[in-house]
Image (cartoon, rainbow, N blue to C red):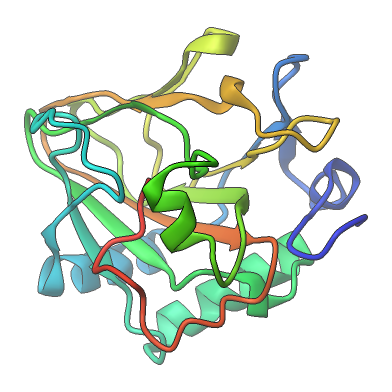
Length: 221
């Protein structure tokens, strides 16, 4: 890996079962059965126990833009410890560059409209959230359950939509090959039409995390 906080296609594809989505727009990977159903159930229970309304780092005036709930996963719970270790093993990224693990919960009708995970340089949220650990580099997001209807993750730039599948991991680089932020990572968590949707997300940073506490209650961009 060329830079701290980064993984690579070669590293990810060395893991059995990893598939790369063929597209020139971004580096995007799928890992099925990354988590067992028992692990998924345990993580869902943690999210159910302590979720709160999700927020935006930079509110845009659209109260329907993000309507899910968020949970800061307890770092010392055995299932969270095991998950963090597996993410480190898979990515090869020093865990010092990892944000605290989060879970997300979507009820019927809830969604997260098209967005990128990186912070826009020059914005107020960039100056606040990137002042210590720098920009987000890679995103690792795992589904914890099948959704009865809806809840797909749609990447418009590549014309691909991923239906939630328990234990399946999506991975993408928030930068392009030239190192610039990649707008083709724009993705939409489509509304849940029936059932519930649960995911966990691990974001990595350019520099070690370094925050004693997060500057806001919710770091999602």
